[in-house]
Image (cartoon, rainbow, N blue to C red):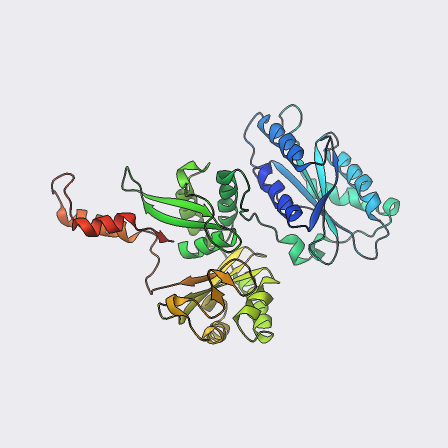
Length: 413
């Protein structure tokens, strides 16, 4: 059996939402709770939300999430999982904390996610120093009592390790849900704003860029997407999120340019090679890659001809241009994409934003322009200001009709 404590989140909502989405999808359920009084998800949310508000200071690591993964050879059955979790949580210092165990059946083997909070009843943070090491010792000591053999965390399957928040239509708090998706997307490795936009789209969120109505600064706006990849919410300005998205994006771009990605590219190259050898067309290739937690984005020109690709590996949280992974494999991928084209730049396996396997649309159009990170409208406006020099304040530097059209224009990053 493998027991692993996962990376903490700055908000309980993000951790809970992942499990709730699984429950709504019918592949998870609440097995048991402690110090909550109910297994109703609304009650669970209220208890954790209240405890989070009671924190004396803002915490970077609020949530606690641990996965319990019994193997087929272990003698521990599901009826003993609550008692096992209770002992582990008690030893870790979470015995009096509210916690909930979710039973997941979304993969071949049933496993469990334990969710709690690192804020105690007095609003203070629970000490989590060497928590993972302590957990290993506890699990090791309970082997004989519960009849299992402790495994190594590295043996956990890729699917069990790969979790990310995805916007869910009708989630209630749209701003918070979009904020969680943006924060998780910023933890990926990417080198262009276009790649960041595609990562965000995998999280079910669309980002657009435009001029502020009261100033000349560039603002970002976000919309939640439904399962078919169509916007299902109004625009949410970056000003409504709890952090400066533009500053965080620029900082992350700088960090990513200095990151060593040789290992991640090597693993992705092998996965892409295996998927290509087993695929006869783009839908089957996408399905094969999705099984490895990899999303494929194909950029096409106005005639529908493929011009480039982006591969997003959710296991390593890295996005690469196809040519960065392998020029030969990228060429093979583009050749596979060169099927009958459709008007408007969509490939033959996409209609109305839905791919042939029913998942979110991951095809993008590219008209050959580079993504400079600044809107065409802003570029034109700044160029006009430079040319005008000391022109009159408020003077219209463009043709009125052209300016009116550009003011309405928004462009996906």
